[in-house]
Image (tube, helix red, strand yellow):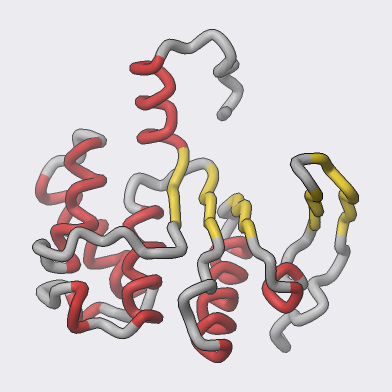
Length: 170
């Protein structure tokens, strides 16, 4: 990961690698319900030793990037599913990870909101973010530049896709 072999790392080193280099987006959002949106993001920044001034600027920038600049003081339970997922994506991007892993990121969303999340992922990809998205949905997988299909834990196919099937018009 990032040019560093991970095979001989101990638990502490692997944890530090994940915390510093990988962003996780979960299907169930996993936001802390007792914290407002800004503090859900701030947790990641504090764990990575980011000072308050830089953290505040990063939070503001990310909330703006996901279209939720006015929701910093809202609690997760008052947000729609799509808003919660966008906050979860912002949280995963807080520490500027090398790789963003997304586990069924549209699984709990209606199809329109799912397409909005995929459009956000496409924007992130175009900005240079590496993404790995796990999905069972073909319409979501069709956004990928590469598709690896697994069956029973084995690679069934590995296909490069030169242009995503559902690319947005430019």
